[in-house]
Length: 175
Ligand SMILES: [Cu+2]
Image 1: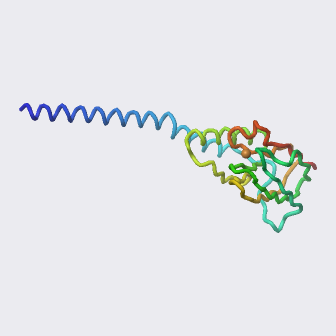
Image 2: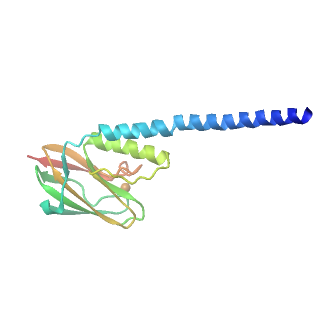
Image 3: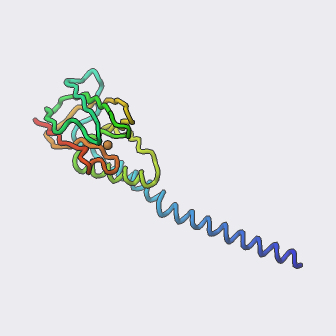
């Protein structure tokens, strides 16, 4: 009887402990992952790209090379014509990852919020949006975009802290 009693007390203790772990996991999940994931997805769905669309290399009118070095772009502002297709060649000379994202101020703010959230959750910051390329350390990538205007947009690196450090510029799309 005594053995059974000890056993059942232990079993109860283990089950309480496991319950606590499960509760903590559930709370953790609710506190971070599903909510975080949900708002990441909502951000993605809400994002509307009004300033054009990705294009094929056969449509390119102009090539612009952008060098990324010391958490800065060597490009400040851009003037683009409505309907113009630009091939951006993005050369990252830094030994950290950067990105080159096209978007309205609103798109960029949403992208920064999403990347900050992903960084907090320890998720990869690889982007798969058509208006953005992630450029790993010492990598070169391309982004081809047909601009639709008139509109004023921005290019920026939304890796946490980089926009604030000055990795941004204006793009004026003229009629
Ligand atoms: Cu950057």
